[in-house]
Image (cartoon, rainbow, N blue to C red):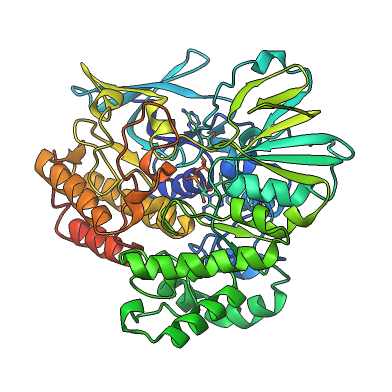
Length: 528
Ligand code: FAD
């Protein structure tokens, strides 16, 4: 007999909801979490300025209308402490903590085909067995930690945004370097620039950033509450799993130049990630993409007073949207401050850290603190960190040339191992909450089906998986998305095979496919 019916790995948004759903099915479920408390992303990423870039009204659970009605978000984009408080509230409201083992990392999963169960080994040496394992391990939970030469020589303090000290860091009056200008870098830079004595930013690739126009949300929340359920339902069928004022159905190629400009202006003033939905063809038509990119470049030139600096901050080498877009609150304006400077590491590569700072090009930048905002081994990193084995086969080996899944939910050869927001699902190209809830519900129904039919396991059949992998690559190739050296492509991790990781076809479409598969009695899966 297994120790549990199901083991869930991870206690972020995904793991918490999965625990609740499996309990409702009557399954004895245990969650194993490497961190010291619930929260996942929002437990680890406590750097200054950390906040969501999908509006909180949508970057929140929709599964319980009472929860939705009782929780008050204070801002359009909530900051990390508020999101973490929300997740703690959820854990308490549904009494989830009693089934979670904290400070425990899963290191190995071993499938026993005869008993149809997984043996789960944790870093304390303990093993537990369960029929089902649900990897709610997160798309952005395995930090990428480049090992700069001379790291040990640096006499100052070093912090990673992805595991910021819980007690906080005193940066006031210090000389600080930030390496990395993705979302976490931008948020950190904007938050600390007014506080530190000197800030030196090391940039490899300039970011496309659209303004957040963050602010209080009480009025909008009150207006939305009577129709919150419908609002959520609409989101589920959109392209990215969240509302844009309108999802534009017109094409750039069919639009007059003045209207194009007006549309970009309007979206810029609205703020947020709906900017890239100004026209249907922004991610598929090179000219449409360039027009959207040029509008952002114009805004950067407007915001940054020094033209040379503006140029260095202007993204030109990749299509807009092909790397994760940033949502900012005064990021570019930071560079008008006297205490902020920019080092372009393409022109002045970082050679090494020294005792006093960072040697880039010919210059040694003396600093007291180095903050590394160097991102994550996205989508596959946390899964590949676990030895997942079925006899001689390991998932890591199977995925060496890129992940292979069916619907991003399971991988052939690894029965009863379900992935929440796995590779080849919309995941990081969407409001993750919409995608997480869909996957958790899908997995819960699949397990319910297995139990109702007296079946012991399921896994994709190889042909369905092959078709899904090919369809993913084909759809991605119809867009500009693979044209950037992005983490969507695995390009930020040395040696990682470059394949486009998320499903680019949209949340609504994906959902129709997933529902169709389930209705057709799990077509493309083998059940026994
Ligand atoms: P996570 O929150 O990553 O939780 C996974 C958990 O699994 C972690 O706690 C980890 O410790 C644990 N874990 C992993 N491996 C193991 C193991 N082997 N053993 C035990 N435990 C393990 N998405 C959006 O849609 N909108 C946003 O605005 C947004 N902002 C973000 C901002 C930042 C700074 C980051 C890093 C990500 C952001 N994301 C955003 C993506 C975010 O990761 C998801 O929205 C969401 O929080 C994912 O929840 P999750 O539970 O699936 O994964």
